[in-house]
Image 1 (cartoon, rainbow, N blue to C red):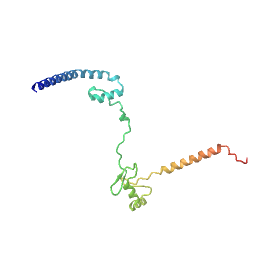
Image 2 (image 1 turned 45 degrees about the horizontal axis):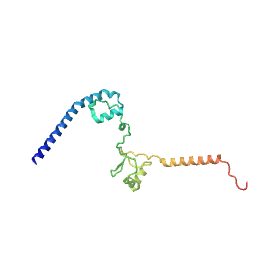
Image 3 (image 1 turned 60 degrees about the horizontal axis):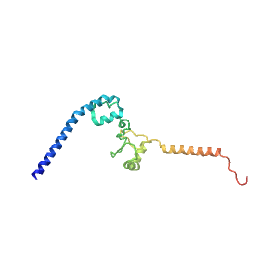
Image 4 (image 1 turned 90 degrees about the vertical axis):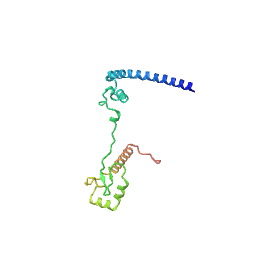
Amino acid sequence: MALTTLQSIDAEIKQLEAQKKLVEKRDFEVPKAIEVLQRYARVLTPAQRRKLAKIFGSELGVETANVPARAARARKIGRVAPKYRLPTGETWTGRGRTPVAFAAWEKGAEGKAWRKANEGARFPAIDGTPVKAPASTATTKASRGAAKKTGKKAAQKATRPAKKTAGQ
């Protein structure tokens, strides 16, 4: 067993020496590659510059700040400040579906009394001033759509020739 252990150690030493040579070669060639990339950075497209900046970071000295990335052009979605606050302390931004607590407060006695005191407002605002409820766009859109449909139908009937009956 001593012979096989010695042979395996020799093989491992040779393998480690080969790895050392590769690392030394890489350490010598990488700065040259970076220098070449820095020289040609001006002729690269913005997408190529971004890729290189991701790979190498700031080592290249490539200006990426003035190049708009896809993420910078994308719509930024952030947190929205709450718009309404109930006396219980719950808050709501006024976006999306009405929270259960707000719907329950609105239907309750306290909510009804508050609405009577603050005509046209739906919920108490954070700063204390009542926020006017927006006009219902659903009814106005529906009425507009109905008017358009009736207008189209009337126009079609006016342009169509009258149907002939069997007696004519």
